[in-house]
Length: 608
Image 1 (cartoon, one colour):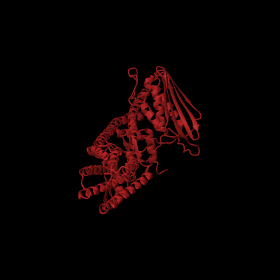
Image 2 (cartoon, one colour):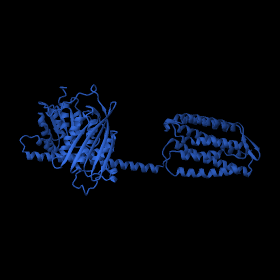
Image 3 (cartoon, one colour):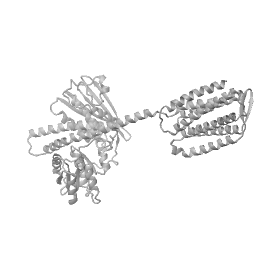
């Protein structure tokens, strides 16, 4: 009766596991499929075990056909359970657990199982009554034992071969089966009336439930919905930024471009030059805000990359000094002092544009929040082998930061003491971008501040030293504009003001300029005339720049370099345009230095 109690308990909790397992949809893993069959087989086996106890209790003769068929069914159950358990252990040991990857294994095990079942059915079986217990014995029973031991041995070999590559938790049911199986066999040998093997298998099946990767389908569906919503929101954000970038940069291109042209005009009254200078400064501030938002977008999308090249640090530092002094102007009684170490190497290898952006953001922050006193700009270096650690510090006598606010200093769109600093311009993006850029370059950033007295920002960035032998050929820095007489440039843009700006910016280069306002006009011009360079806007009605470019490329003889000229400067757009086959990319507002580089690259191609 003790084994009956175990069997009844096993029936109860296996029945509960079946209900729990099938009450939810499951991920279509092969191990889940095997387990879904295994729990049903176990339930049938436990039912057969309980029926055996009832038949014994009713005193049914062992010579009856009912008792014989029931015992054969129990033996087939043992074979079935072992077959499924062996298959489960083999499947979880494989890296690829898909049905196709395990198809051959399943076929082999199934053939062995069917052959074993046929043997158990065909081989004779006898019964022995001893100590008020009935035991089946004979070739059929021995066959079950032999196949079971072979299966256990095979599982142990597979486990030992894969124990390092598979989560050990997966093999826990096998450990329990071997441990309890040995105990059950010993008990049954000592007390023949205690038949516990079915209860052991039921308990192992119960434990297996907690080792399965079994997130329910409702959770998966909710996660998929959340992911789709996040993707949709991300696409909406990208589209919004793309549209805003285009809408802001298009008029800003005219303001910046025409202001640059005016600033270079001879004979302009000094007062007008001052006004133009203010316009350029204001447009640069607006462009800085737009670029800041786009930089944050790139960082969050993981598309902002560090592009390393050789550069001359002293040249960068001198440019930063000029920019900072221009921002200070003559309005603030501030002394700007520089302290550059003489042991900084002449040439370094790193992303000079991002290094410059980091330092400029810190300097700009100091200028904004310092009304009087001084700003000290320190740059020192620590050299170890071929690495130079630049230690950049900016110390000011500005308003300072409260201690409890320093931790939130680098949060996006965060500004402190807004009532006190209401006249100070800015979005609160500069320092957030600075921190992200420093982290991308594997550097460090430390802030020290005394509220009401001033702040000190210290940045450390490692840059590789370029030796004289490995140093690239130095660029000749000159204020003179290279001219390209005879070179023909075609500008394509649906906005008349943008065409005017691009044309005015190209005038000093002495190129032959042709302007058209649509993709179709571009195709017509290229069909009838040769051009050395095409500057092609993308966002045009009827036929976009991308569509126009695709039409141009349909002609196998078309070899003219095409540079996309666009106000769409969101994260990844440059890479997308280059992937489509455009030769280069120019963002609006047109940067004069970038324009110089593009013209030098494509209009002197034959000469190089």
